[in-house]
Image (cartoon, rainbow, N blue to C red; front, side, top):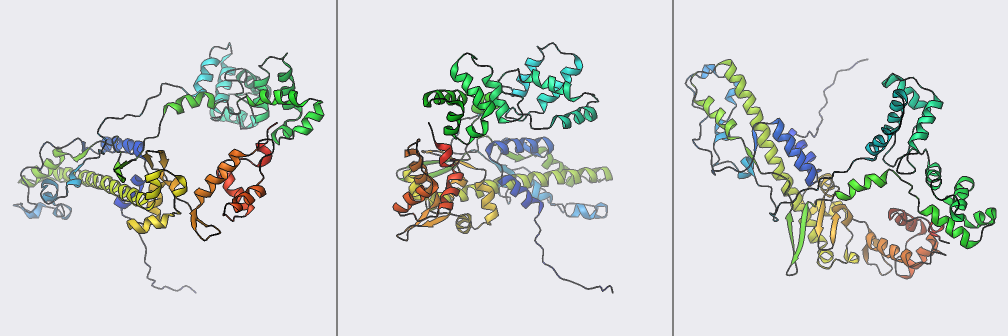
Length: 486
């Protein structure tokens, strides 16, 4: 039986302004610059630059109408004074100076490099191919990932060509086109797996050199043993001496497992991280400033504010005028909200960084990683009076430039760990010690996770082997067997 009941619920709903602020908080400096450019393009009521005068002249009273009957309800809600008088309006609502302490101009470097896909296509154009095979080869190049591998099945690519480009081909033609791509530079592109990638490269080396010959045979016949570093099995299989095996392995290690990156890294190396904060030490005190050099100064368009003023003075208010003023008000509202959100973003970022610097003061004064205290998002959220989710948005994408390097804010957060003496230490401190111990180990007999756990226990850090393995993986350090060298 159907029943109709009343139910009261409390729902939390974010306003458009709050949503806009949340989105802006996540943006790093460079992305913010682009976002502001986009807003300037779509909202004519938002201007770039600083007002020449401090106030907007000739304040308008919204009630100055002779014929109130001609004014719609929507118009009655207009507060023309709000848009035309700066005296009672906070400065940040009409003007946002986003420059930080550092006033010199810094620009992101512009790279003139090209992607490896473009490099391959340029080489392909020099190859005498028919139109159909050329189009097939270009499609294959477009299917390569950033590392230079073809991860998709050839049968799926045949279907793609048929449906998207109306090109009919078969497996043999596709394999022929792939073979042509695999002859292009850098060596190894177009491979379907790591083994094929390394073989494509080793085949281009001196085939008469003993170490190259053995290296090729290892990759062809004992690739799995090579990846697992079972050198004893490889040596026995090929009846190779230790020195011969060492030379062959050295040849393999010279190869590039990600050939696509050899070109892509040129562009990446030219780019740099633009820090969102600058942290300096002056007379044993931490000084923090916002680095917003890439964000232009913003203001409300004087032209659009004057449009409202002119409308309020007008004796005759036609429908077209009312429609126009509705549009103007919407744009002015959006501009004010955006400037307000930018300022709130700046304040939130600054408060968060100041709280982190205060919490980790000892580290920032000395630069010693062992001085980092355990710190979680809630610690900072409680200090600044913000939600944990808001703090998370800030620290996950913002960088700070310090005297010791440029760091992602997230890197200063870590869980706590108790030592045998009962002292609370940061897990980052434990990871640093773990990294140092692995760095000192004999590469012929690297330390296992069990051994590392014992070493840490001797230093007062009583953690389990599985925790050691977890920290080691977080540091991108392979297991002992994979760290072993001949």
